[in-house]
Length: 223
Image (tube, rainbow, N blue to C red; front, top):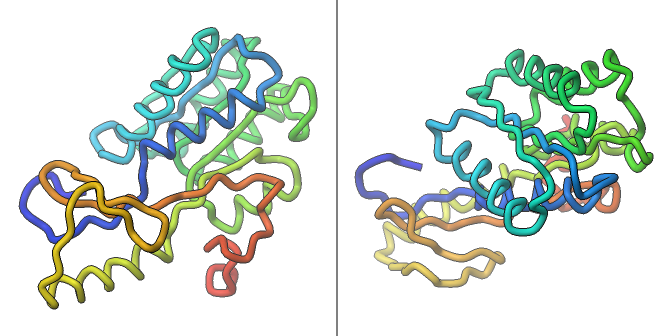
């Protein structure tokens, strides 16, 4: 989101919900409600990183206080995230889940689990829940093969669609207000003095990974 200035509409997913839903997934699928959850954060200088971290922490503290939160600041750097995952795996024998705030480090994290002797299929009793954020086709493949538990499907196609939509609305003199509901299952919110269409971003796991409506399953993204 812009840090200053006036814009007609920000088109962005609800990143607080990213964090909340990611860590809710870990907590509800972990083998125990006590132990540790590692958050491999993006850059906390970015609003997306801040929101995802804050959403996760708020949810776990309010609903699963016995899960200890371990934070690692990666600045969206994949080697750093993989190294931090190795540290968490070697430091915490009761590690219940890893929340990585973007998709690129997932292969490296899975390799680190394998090297540490902690790689188990999704759903097994000793499994460490791993969830990412993006919803790219590669993640869908990892979910189908029971390596990755879940991801958040970032509405990449909708960003372009509604950016064009609101550009047209601005030219036509239309107005919007915070709290207004849209016809595409989102709400207009206020963000740093501007309006934002906070687009929904669904959780993807084995139950819905083949849904053709997910942008990661579109013919364009797989071509």
